[in-house]
Length: 435
Image 1 (cartoon, rainbow, N blue to C red):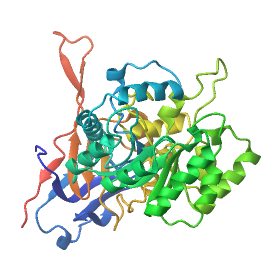
Image 2 (cartoon, rainbow, N blue to C red):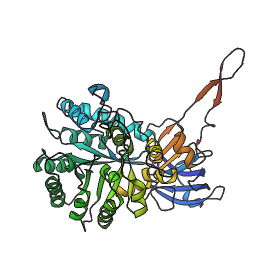
Image 3 (cartoon, helix red, strand yellow):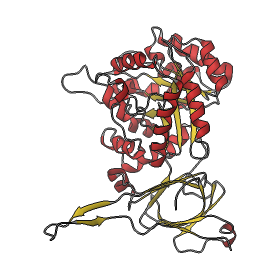
Image 4 (cartoon, rainbow, N blue to C red):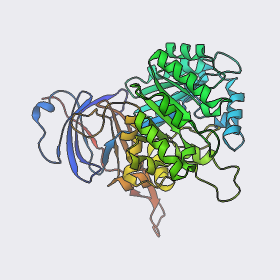
């Protein structure tokens, strides 16, 4: 079946869930209507009408990932820029020089390509930071491009837009970005000449407009520490609040870290760890005993902080690699963040959606039908191998399906010829017509 448009799904059968149990699910509209042990009859009234039944034998079914901190406006620009490899300052310099030459059309094309790669790998929601450009041209062309991309992908994935402005971006530019359709206020106050002053300014804009805040926060191994002040300033706010990177927390001694975590908890700020970019950008100045550029995710989870994992940059000056795959982020949270595979997967699925203030989703009755089926027998296998066979459901509709085929020659065969050693089972999608 070709996916020329999102295909409604009314049931999933024989799925393996994260706890190892096998289940059948009924879907009505954009919600999971029922979850029963595999082989148990689903209520017939839930199966009435048109829709696909997907046989998920051999697949692990989990909540579809969400990307809580992306930069779609920068995505896939590495080959165009050919930046020097290096730390955050070099990346910023390379990006600023190139961004002055970009058109809105180019930004939109790269952003849409990256978004569709994310979708194919199972991500059905993205929060993207978008630069309020300065140094030449319309500072809002990035926002305009991402608003257009969001509209063009409506029905395939949800996109939230953060207006990302530096200390040089005037209040009026933020206001205009929000008027154009940006959802949240963002920035990187730790990089400003007056970090706390810029933090206060950004929060004033958000408070005036009644919108959420998602800040790049303390993205360095030394220097400014603004997270505690951010938390104190937003105490009692009811809008979405998030802080990305928070690398500086990973350098603090326990007695220094505990009061910061207490402030974060008191204001319920979600913390977003971004392992691939921070592992790449941090530590270049160290010749030995190179430190990890990560926030202390396990300490935050143990304290009860809402934690998400994200991919951040995708092949741009801030990160020359990246697969647009939440399972890559989860794997890095295991190897570099020392999380268990179940906790790492949760960070890129339920944790990410929580920090993004999105509705509960996943293979749970009453939850939104945002689902990823990946050919694996358990969570550890999925995180370790990131299998290519995937089925993606967004708001109860099939929006992407990937099939991975491996052909390996049989040793000693005569004549030598490719032998199908591993391949997907027969087509797992079968159409059930309405009675």
